[in-house]
Length: 103
Image (cartoon, rainbow, N blue to C red; front, side, top):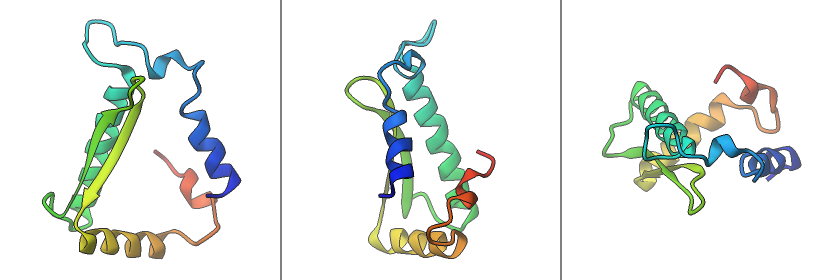
């Protein structure tokens, strides 16, 4: 992992960011859980647009023990290999600019 990637990873688990772990008003889930589920749903939509079936590869939002959002991607080895190849074709190796697009 490159240094800038490590910094981004560490920042998402910054203990001073109460919005990521505080309970949502009127809900029995954390903000991290809500954001993780929303991100997983968006990723599943994108995977479907790329021709993947939900039984081949699926993203699921969950939380860490301290309530921070986490998205897990589970799939068959063949589907993951197809996804890796697609990502390799889309993103030039070592070029961080393409990752800064609209979220």
